[in-house]
Length: 435
Image (cartoon, rainbow, N blue to C red; front, side, top):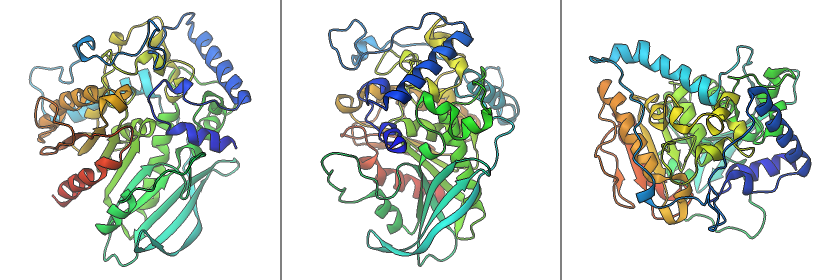
């Protein structure tokens, strides 16, 4: 039941603050609130600002969806010297930004973080979406702990040579949301991948780290903490999920059927944030698909549009980040951050990334234009490394794919889903991987 509650929460539509999207187990909710208050006390924070209200239109803090009120904030520069070059970026500026992103937002992977021991729990030929496949299910274990990470891998059965693999942060195979059955997609993303002769994998993030503050004493964060509360710069769930993806990559790199030079990471919503974090911190992933990631992901935090920093630092989402990040929702302002989302995306350079979102009416909470701005501004790092980044200074039309450069952007005409963007992403992947 605990996993089910956390899993449902993990990809609930970001149409409102995460803390109001679901009603978790009251016991876990109380534990989360206790840890949140204890974290504030350790930081010496007495007052936190209130985030955007996604429900009550009469609220003075009702979420802003008016572009005229979003502001035009000045972003911290990526290039900080007069005559930059690629060597300076790689040896100086990128490591500097990585340290800032770790210390001020996402946290550090602790030195005692173990490596997962993967074991096959199921293997065999299967028909999936009309294709003959070789499918495996793995469990990632840490000896002496209850951790059991859920990973599945599906490869085309008749592939010749090594194949690319797209790793999704997602749900266990066969998972269904409670309530009325949802219609199945006419062209599932898995079928689209298999049709190209590629493979796909699904990592269940909540089996790496639970998605609530109560879970900070559980999962991989709890194992490495050894019973102590998180220190100022310790990792949050987003970094832990990214660590899980890196552990999956370790497994893939030893598989002779997988082309380890062509492994992509994909996610939606909070898992889109995790995909962006994975691309930033693990340079082995050659491609990223970052869908509707919003604040904490590809959205410019300094814009007053949709979700704000104050939502991220509230008790429903604080566990995604290092404790140090909470001060930007209290005594410090968003403008005090020494970076913004363009810095996070720039950490992927020169590797290609595809940034996507839905329409403002149905996906405004994630601020699609803010993600476009971040992708555009991150292009300075790509150009420095000899790649074009995002082509064009103004957002493309709805359902138009902007993919001439190494950063692609697409805003589809639906809501909070990656489904309409899969064909465009796979075309982009075929082009950049083929090159």
